Image: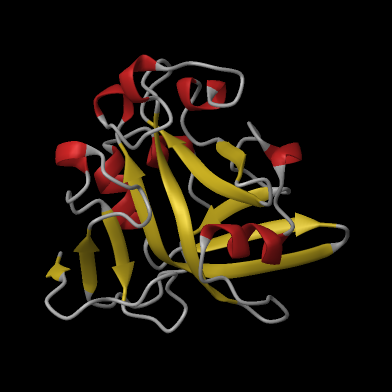
Length: 187
């Protein structure tokens, strides 16, 4: 299991190293899991696409300002929950968004942040929980790596210089939220 020290590091490094790890959710006597194949880094107040852009702080994003290795779950578009992992020390509001998983047995499609949360039964009730058993945690099962790609983030709109930064990291997988385009950057 990955401890808080894994998340208390450079957010881009954490995002890249999360690829291939296994996200586990235990609830209602079931253990659900999937392999992380797509994530995005959000880099705090300077990052115009981050919830903490410009130093914004609200009840919604307060968890981002807390300790690394915790779940930041928010509700968007009135219908989807999205799961992030808080990175960096307390007071540095950065996180990694989980965009897609290759689903484990009994888990439905996980190609998009809302589908990940739906498939694993993740909602705001776990906002702020530490990423430790039994509720939600990440395991390194030492699966062989694959070729990594770095592309611009998905669906952030025009965020100036941040729009085209390669902060989406993924493996080529049929479970991605958006397929890779020809010529995608390799990492």
